[in-house]
View 1 (tube, one colour):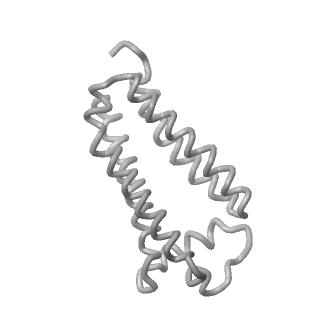
View 2 (view 1 turned 120 degrees about the horizontal axis):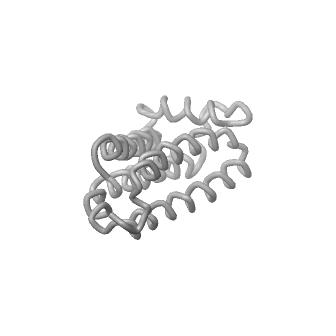
Length: 141
């Protein structure tokens, strides 16, 4: 992957990292405003005041943010190795993204946050555009 597509996938990684930071910010009441806004935008019903203060909720959301940060940085740092490994590595990464997409989508709908499937679809599409356009999934490099 070179040129525009390399820049695109790098920006995609930074987008994942930024989203992780937004979720991690829920760990502290002083920095949870953007996270609350995001949850309210994606919820099928208005969330009660203090919903992040429910037992375990603040921890769970912040932990999800930390995992998302780690996922974004992992892909970012491994991009050169993934590119060097070629199509099998790109297929593995794409398969992992597909697993996330299906599981996250089903659970989002089941828990009253079906609107979360819209940004999920945008994130998946933003990943697939450079991957498919660059041809990295093909066996020949």
